[in-house]
Length: 266
Image (cartoon, rainbow, N blue to C red):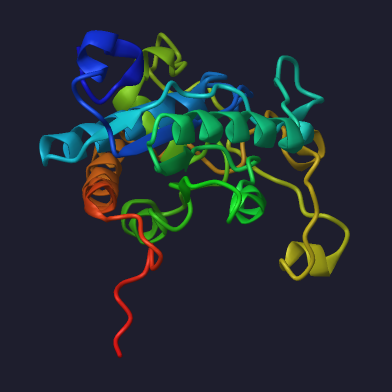
């Protein structure tokens, strides 16, 4: 039994050991080029969350990882078989229900650790502000938490099933990464993507929801072939260091009228 994993602990333990912080891993079910599994985002969310919670728990923080949600918003990938879509409004209702459950159980701090780019939870956080006693935090680990690390570790991390995600797969769920049995090479294409016919979109001045079957060949966006397991392990080590320290601080912080800010100086 790992006491920071809710699905593994029992009521005998829970009723004697209250928690301060919950972590909700959010994944997806979608193809990732030809070599990574449909559960890649969920596997990543669980691998990161469990290790972050473990490191924080070992430092005395009362943190618990909720069971991962393996579905996300897939409207861009629905032309590919078995991409399993849950609309943003439905995901929002699910998270609201979980937030209500945490409020009932007096766990007033929730970190959503999101591993899927199609999940956009910032509007939900804004909508819930002031409507629940639960204080909500969002970590899209593949953005701000790792932006500088990606530059250090990868020549080109990729957008989807590229070097970064492949490195994590090689390090933490290698049994699901498809390779050529003769050469050991990844069974993946180069992850090339197409530009639109509009310069403003290509330059990022205007954004769209990208139809993935037109953008990519086999759902990959970014070349995975330079990835190594060592890159994945180094990325995980730094993420755990950063995010577990945050959980320790969050667990110790009182929820008062100034939260999450410090005491106002007179």
